[in-house]
Each structure stands twice: as C-alpha cells, then as structure tokens.
Length: 159
Image (tube, rainbow, N blue to C red; front, side, top):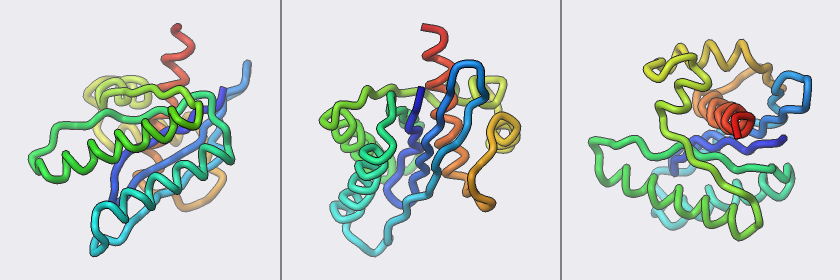
C-alpha cells in the first residue's frame, strides 16, 4: 500500500509518500515541505500548492491520499484559507482517480504518537522510531505528513 500523507496549508504544507509492503516496515519514499510566498495573493499560492501535489500524485500513484482535517483555529481567516486549500486538494485527488481519506488531529496523535493527547514532540519521536527518511534534514511539516500517512495505513489494516 502506498499513501500520500498531507499536512494541509497554503504557506507551508507537508507532503510525504509512505509505503507499506506485507511483512515489512513502513518506509518513506518521498517527503517535502511545499512553501509559498506570503506576499503573493491567495489564488496564486493555492494554485502552486495544488499543482505541486498533483505532480506528486502523478509521479508516485498512491493508493490513498490522506489529509489531516482542520483544527479549529483562533485565526478565522487562516482557518478559512486552509479549509479552501483542503477542498482544492481533495478535488484534485478525486478528479485524478485517487481515493481520499481524512483524519482528525486526535486520530493522528493516537495512531502516530501512541495516544490522542500526544504533543508534537511525542509524535515526532514516534514517527522517527517507526520510519527512516531518505534524506537527512526533515522539517516538522514533513513529519506531520508522514504521521497522516501512517494513520491511513493503520486505519486501512483495521478495515
């Protein structure tokens, strides 16, 4: 099974392709942090993010595209923009024929961090224990995307 995990955002977005073969550990095939220029208008930033993810989908052909659901934010403008980004990413995946799955932050913390109230450091520690990265420097956004992908793999096993 191959999963594209996405930690959605329009300024910084983590993406990771994680593969799980029968009887083997999960492995990260690719990860990146997609960034956009904060001085660009939102439509340009959204287009850049979606186009980059479409390229990754076409290259890696995941079985599932998994996204983190929106965490309620105090900044409503940012929350709305992230929600719009999520919608565009789901649309892009579905129109390319990829199945999508969505997971809440607490589901991801439970699957990748060991418990539903795990903090970022707990999740990062567990992710680094579970998988190795093909590159030395990995950003937090990439680790979050791997956690989303690991959640999809764990949930798929359960049915």
